[in-house]
Length: 114
Image 1: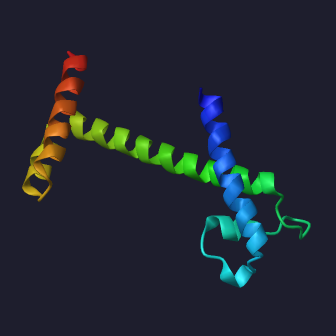
Image 2: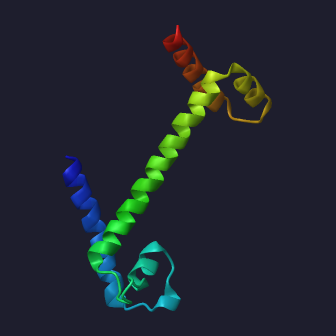
Image 3: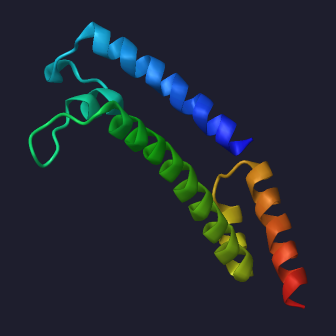
């Protein structure tokens, strides 16, 4: 299933890449990551091949997802580890659902420590 999703995702990006190649944009018209990668040169001064562009885009999206998930996990861990942090957060103007979520995480963390 994961392989099918990865293939479908890469195909979507590939279609957009082919479309942009037909438009023949120059480096001055670069508007996003794909445009920049299409005009990037390797160590030998050659443009990246399509597979390299695709790999870099997929990696960038994956890294963004992983780093956000990791940051959220560690943030909740450290908040749950120190109840004083939650008290300080309550003084801030956070929506109640965020504080409720943190409160639940604290209880889960405390239950696993006992």
